[in-house]
Length: 287
Image 1 (cartoon, one colour):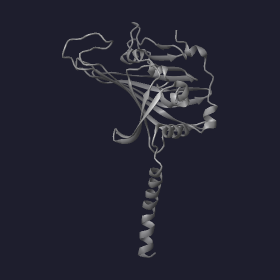
Image 2 (spheres, helix red, strand yellow):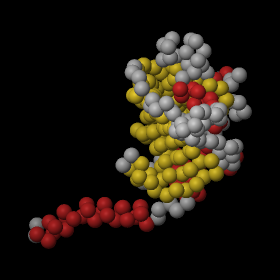
Image 3 (cartoon, one colour):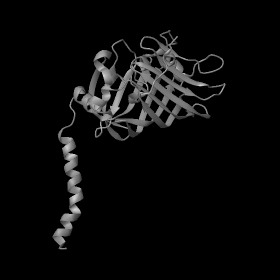
Image 4 (spheres, one colour):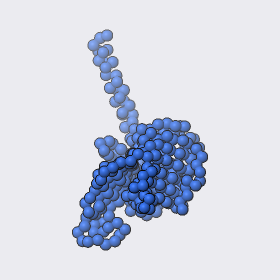
């Protein structure tokens, strides 16, 4: 083989990679509607999506205190959904921390106690006070049939397209999500620019300077408190035509006015997805 032919052969993979990259960049999404359409197709085509009635997701979960304490527990997680109804449960069978249960029955929300002393965890309290996280079907992302982007018109939520943002060293499309009802949360949804899969959600709540949670007056000079809840989704697999994550990593960080930061993590792995599996209506009892 001549030198010119060798050079041309060696350059071919680079040219293909460049042309594929250029093709992707030639038609980037420019607004929320375009991103929404691409995202929905990344889950499944419209015909398959229209046949979705219910879903059950099961897997293991590991809880760990990453800052402000120590300790960890292993347990099981289950996410059951049917339409807008949602149940998200993590069980550890430990008297000091039994786990979490978040329920929405289409009208009412429930956040169960996390301990035998009938107290809630930091995560439970955060979601209880800002129940739009479960009311809007955001918790669990695309793993749930209640995922709001599947039926945005009925949700009457507003999306704000913020373009590409560098998040954790990766370029991602960012959408601001504003529920129809008032919310004091800053909610952001993030999507892979090549696959348009939803890979992350962040919920940020910041108190005003000189105020504590709940709006009560505090001593002058206190700094605002910041709370960040985030979910990261990865390890996507296709089941029954639906491409969904099998790894859901939840983190809650609290930076209160006292200055003592805490960071908790719930790591759900090896999630098994069952589409259109019958779900007992009692699972969605929010009383």
